[in-house]
Image 1: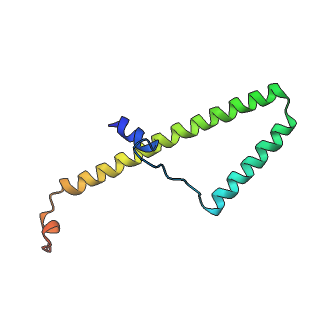
Image 2: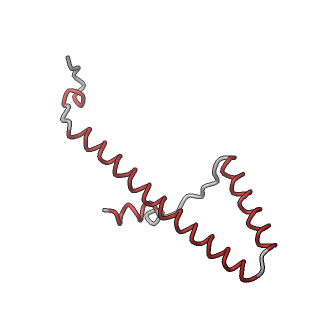
Image 3: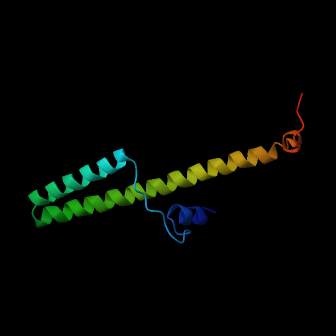
Length: 100
């Protein structure tokens, strides 16, 4: 089951993955991140740029793996909640009859 959830989390089950434009706060954070990276790269020599790129790639990988795990955990919690709703067997709720 986790393979399906990972594929869903990675947008591999979508025909057209969504483009996230984000909130104004998100866009500002991305702008700041890009400006800071450009300023750093302007000050670094080739060896330092390579090290900085390696760091950025590792940080991206870590963030992605964390997001996948968070998505899977949230999905499982939601599935457990759904199971509990149906397992309760509250026929009165489903049929519309009021309980005492």
